[in-house]
Amino acid sequence: MIRKLASGQFRLYSRKVDPKTGKRRNLGTFDTRPQAEQHEREVQYFKRHA
Image (cartoon, rainbow, N blue to C red; front, top):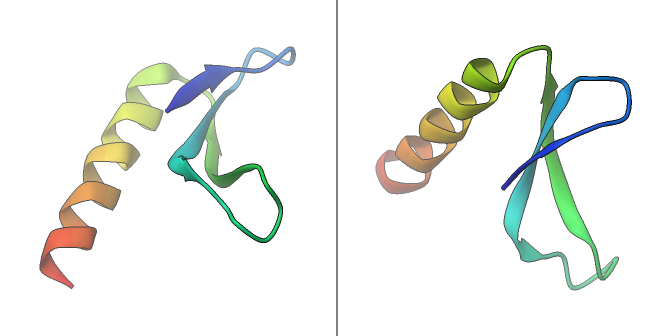
């Protein structure tokens, strides 16, 4: 899940809520949305191929 921050950056959050904190895990902050989308694809690939 990608959200735009007040600073104009984009942050990638996990899809599921972290049971310890009750919030979504921060998976990285990026300057542009395409960068965040690319990293989301990399995360999904890693989950299937690690």
